[in-house]
Image (cartoon, rainbow, N blue to C red; front, side, top):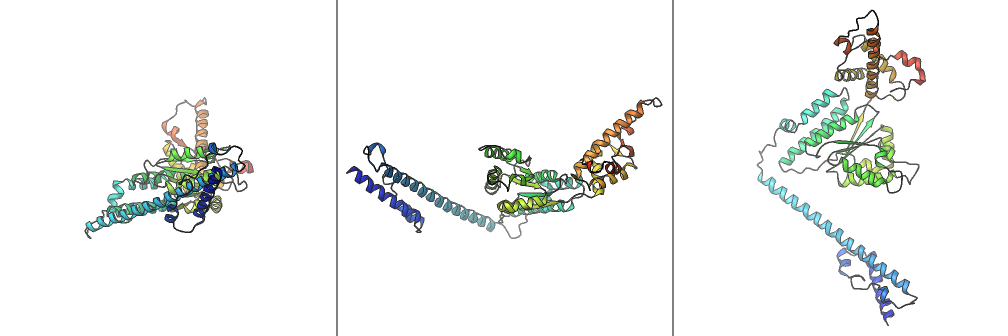
Length: 407
């Protein structure tokens, strides 16, 4: 008798769960019908008859009932969350309309200059202009973004509808074109405008995000995200996260975590991807969801030789060096030649040239001042001056030929 009753109850509950899973009727109608679990139609193995050949079937039916009940509750919770979100949206709209009715038509939003200076945005933009040579398209794009943020802030002051723009970015260009520097400036602007808490930049590569073994990738990615919260996570050479030749590559897990964070936690983290343009374009073709989450694609062009010479002057000035007049043409010729060789890195190549010039200058002064004809004294001007003899030359690159793969 017990076995027959249990079997009937289990079949009834399973049928009810199956109808709930396939029914196209509204959620309320499904939720109103109690499932087998809700009616107490669960399988108690301790009460089953020993040796019952149907025991395995009873257990399967009981498990199916439990799963159906879990799914029903999930649907109910999702429906309630959607209703609450809609209600919150209506309340915000109502409150905003009340604020708008209380503002006179002639009320000023304020002066743009006041917002720019008060928040320190002007200072950051001026420093960007002064510290970075060239890159006019990049600087203009940064100004465009800053302008939007300022105007949005003025709109919010009057209670006007303002949606937070997608601030995730993609910087494309060769090494040494200023991508990390611009990311830091953007962090300062966004922090001063209230779009991120501290504006710091955390730089990461695949090695920082992807583990070598199963279960290692998620903790590494989440740890880097945690470090960057409140600021910018700059992922250099982001295309290495995806390996098209291996669909089981652990980088895919890191990408999925990043996509989720970029969508659901964009108020507290700005993700910036960086790398060569052609490789980034290919990466986006594999991961279209990543490209659609990025609102600002900025291309960094290579520097021209004259711009690189100006960068060299800035770098030398920071180290308290100057160039003799005859050293500049030699440096320009060297840079122009170096640009035609592999692994050219723009400003990084210039910095390495400055380092070699410092070494050559030190060696030259050392030899000159140890010469018996010299009194051995060195003037401050000599310590600070790069001469023609100290400069790496294009002729040296020519002599080295294909082996001249230097930074």
